[in-house]
Image (cartoon, rainbow, N blue to C red; front, side, top):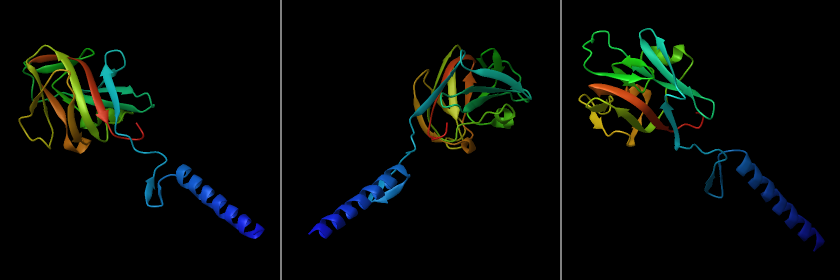
Length: 186
């Protein structure tokens, strides 16, 4: 009887150790149930505004970047089209004026200041004043773009390779740009 009790306790202790390793050690399956120690979250957001954002001229464009609370240096690009200089439609942000606001590292401006674009954007909201509005397009939406409501969240699922960008209708001043993104690192 004593040997049976000791053997049962040994089996229980082994099961407890294996369960602890499965829960602490990372992703795995335990009894058909998926276990993750550090799940990927998709509810991060960051807001670029005048108080937390650096705007730096890089080869005629503007790297617009900041550091997230998790320590990642991320940004967007204010792009100037050399073929267009009509002065009728432009963005202004933190004193810089440009033609397109790109949510990807257009021309490598972000890389040159040590910042990254967002890997997967799940939403955005752009707040602005002046002009007639802001249009959004990417390779997923095609040409023509969609008019974006001022300050309202717009749900998307886009990557830098989708070339997401905004166009100004008239002269628009950006007051803030919030990006929702999915990435465990940023």
